Figure (cartoon, rainbow, N blue to C red):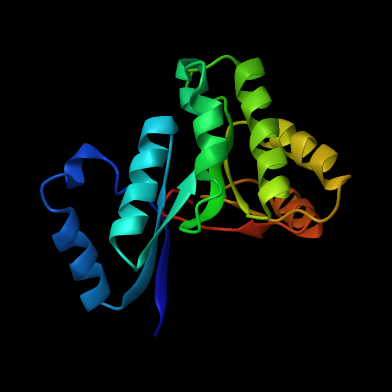
Length: 180
């Protein structure tokens, strides 16, 4: 069996002492590739560095909705630059989060649209985080789908059947996790 971990956060400090051991253990246990997801400019840069260090690790770069209000002046430019790296296989994690109150909705929405535009311009899929914001996420996706079929995944999907069907019609993929 060929397993791929499509969503982890190897850039977190918890892995700073044993990152190499973690990657080696994953490979030894049948995981052939790992995608580590950036949540801001700094972690996206670290994710790309890990992908350059380990041949089985790939990166996704972006600014997570909960961190959008903390983004600095040049952070979006960093994300756009990193997106061009051959080790980057996806854009995000992006989307909307109404569960936590870490960032104003208008800032999250602005960055969500930016990520979708970046995904289209660099031809890499996007990863959507959606928490208590299903209708608004689908509204943003519908607008983006006016440019053509979407190329992304609804990460940790736990919305309705109606939402799943609409996302699939727009070209999205769904991922299911323990939260469901």
